[in-house]
Image (cartoon, rainbow, N blue to C red; front, side):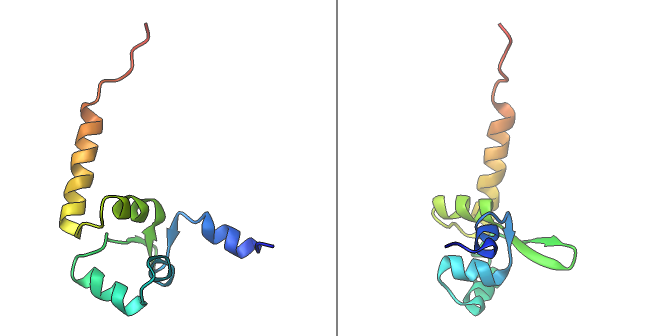
Length: 91
């Protein structure tokens, strides 16, 4: 039987470093080193809490885990392409 807590964690939009490390199969220390070296996406601040977007982490992994600079460029390019896409028309 799945507990309510694990169900909530599975549906979380943003997770702390401990959960990110667990999801990636690495230690929190290694995650910290990757973050300091610009090798993982930046987390977001929610008040005093630091969290990573689960959606962004999945997209980053699917993109081949590029370094942060390349990842940010990819996100900007994707946003620019979405902005250029024609809007559907009512015909």
